[in-house]
Length: 58
Image 1: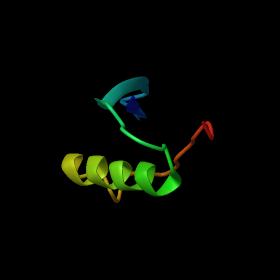
Image 2: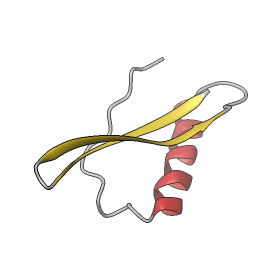
Image 3: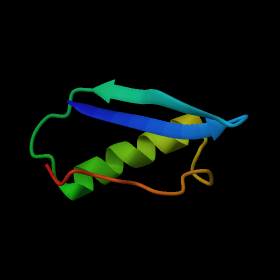
Image 4: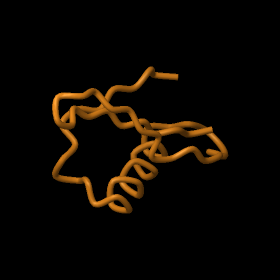
C-alpha cells in the first residue's frame, strides 16, 4: 500500500492530510514511488508547493 501524507501550517495551525492511499503492486522501487508521487502532486496541483519529501527506505 502506498500512502502519501501532507503536512502544512495554515493560519498558524499544523494540519495533516492523507492525499493518497492506494495499493502498490510489485517491487516498491524508487522509480515506482517517484511515478506515484508525480501522479499525486500533479492531481492536486501542488508541484510548486512541495518543500520536502521524506521516505522510510522500506
